[in-house]
Length: 614
Image (tube, rainbow, N blue to C red; front, side):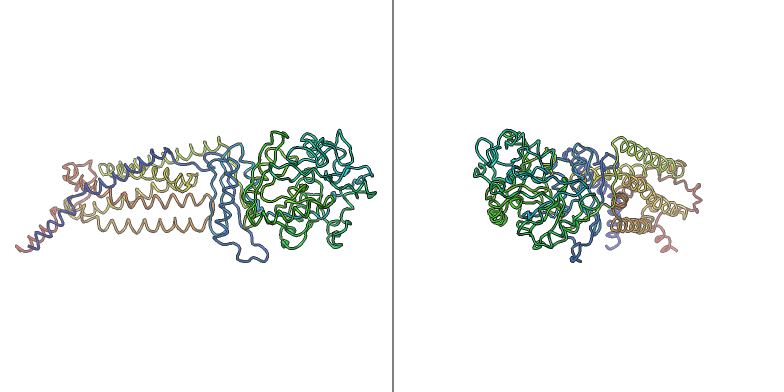
């Protein structure tokens, strides 16, 4: 009873190859159907093939924070950068970590790609600090001293900063803080009106930072006259003398006088020093765009307490503004500080918004504000959107520097894709020609298996685009070309094992089954080594090389699937055909051509019977 049972089990194991073929066909059909259902009929192309900019950011160690570079902070940075880029309307941007301290940002070609790049690596350590005093940057030119009839401090300008233009921008109704007719507190009118035109022109020509108004959103501005030192006989000091104002510590005034903001390098150095200062300490800082430097008090409201901000075009004043709201804690903090600043003289009624140690805006506080407020002034659409984006999405938990930037035009990307496809087609054609010449009829099995592998690889790559952001770049194409050789190598191992069995005098069907266990071990070991190499390469490398490693690992894993569920079952089925079973000269299994040893043995069962008879 035992022998027939073994025979049936062996027959079942060898005689049902259709099960494996049906399974792999169902998998292929499901992947193809999923590809069409997802609406993606081709793999997502990387920047080097589709065109765009790829930026590699490297996290830098921060003073006093030796363990700041960790997975949590890196993931948080990825989330913030992704929201910043997408907030600018850049579609299909990719942001992902690579290794322990790198972030790859791929920005496709588009109208906002340059604007997005400017915000990608911005650390955005955001804070709100009260202005203690300010001064113009000394560029070797004398600073005009204001006369007793100079502009009221409520405008935020002395003649040295803005002339006699009216720059009371920021009130919700577009008027100045003097009265409903737009006049200043001393009764002057005409070119001192606080409408949006005056604010926009004056701010645009003389400096944005101190002309912007900070007011309650959708609430009327405070109409009470601002204090005017000129009426009390006191003259407003010129900006270069501002550090001598009461309430400014002497050492801080000295630091402000010594602060160099005249060059880009000097501003970067000053910003780095200010960004690394504790929130509880005052700082001196440069303006991001205008020739102004500030002495600022301790942080009154951390930027993380801004819950939402957006750029809006104010139809009434015909200018761009930034509307923002705070969290509950931030609302209380903001109300406290604006309540204190509203009654102070210029410039101490200004509120500086600092980003990475630079002053991005210094609006004048006209009333006590709580949750909803707006920043208005010399914004164009781009600058308003940038500030709103930064305020809304907050600061990165780490500082980064660009370690690599690659920009590819769409035309160059198309050429590279074409070249890669041509190289792949040539490689595939050479493999097929070799198989046909050397293996003849067996090459049919190899071609069928290569087609199955190509379908699986293509559909999986296409589906991985929307699923996990996988993009096919040029190194990935190279990995797919290399995989053709790995897959062909598996066929060759199996075919050679079968031919060895035929050379030993066995007929084809027993030879196919006896060759499989030994070929299977060799294929698994070979593919494991290739997959291990791809995995190590993926882990230790950064950037586009990971595309090569990922594709190589994917195709190596698929090679095992194809060999087990396609190559072996197809070989078993064709071994039953007379063309292959009888060793036709064009089958690739001709015993005479292979030098088989006669007589041909039929298998283990025949040998066992002969032994018993003997």
